Amino acid sequence: MVDAVIVTDHRGRVTLANHAAEGLLGRHLKELVSLHILDCFRDEDGTSVSWIGKRINQHERLKDKRQLAIRPDGSTAPVLLSLVPILIDGVLVRVIGIMRDQTEVERQNRKLVIANEKLEKANNKLEEIARTDEMTGLLNRRAFLERLHEYIALARRHREALALIYIDPNRFKPVNDTYGHKQGDKVIREVAYRFRRVLYPTDVITRYGGDEFIAMLPRTNSGQIITPLEKIRRELCFSIDLKHPKTGLKNGVQITVAIGGAVRRGSRIPPAEDFIEKAEQAMYCSKKKESSYETDLED
Image (cartoon, rainbow, N blue to C red; front, top):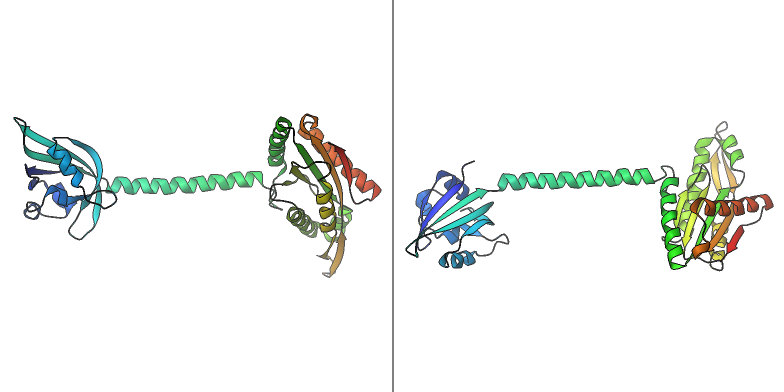
């Protein structure tokens, strides 16, 4: 593409322009010769470019400065403007202006920015999918373990307490056997919803296995864990209507969960897998004793 070129006299009045300049500025040469060069441009924010006149008077060159070329209809075109003062014996005799139209370049850049934004959103979505349990919307096992390792390291460093709560629905297999896996999935989703609802947003929850869930409670010591355990016990004792696959009738099914908790502080916090095992053992004790919950506390 040919650069647009205009030439002015020593006062800044346009005297010559090539066809590219005429097209870019939307004026024929006979219209341009009546204009001062400063009337042809605006700054990026639409304000006057009087500062360019001062640069020219001081015989300073302007190199590839982004400006807006002004057309008669009020529209603008982004250009890279270079101005070269021509001097004879130190006296300004003319100025040569070179304009490079950036309309297409900036259009392509905008398309590239939009494409990159879409790609970033798609990548974020894929990452979210990779870290999320599809059925419940909770963190999946891998993502939860990553977070647990991080929280254990922080709790050890700051000598803070960390608690795990492990839950498992009681007699869930008979529910699946009687009503089928589709209705069993309905129970799993309801348990996940209620489990998440009863805890704080800062708590980290996962569907750890088929019907097993774990919550990690940062900065929660042995005295503080009792309150969330009680809330979980109440919230996860509920009735849900399940449709029988043969009769098509809906039956109210009572759901309860076995709950186990483990608390450790600072350097006493074991590796992630061992910590989970302690909470799991407490949960199994609760299931065997048919008690509300069991805890393994060492604070």
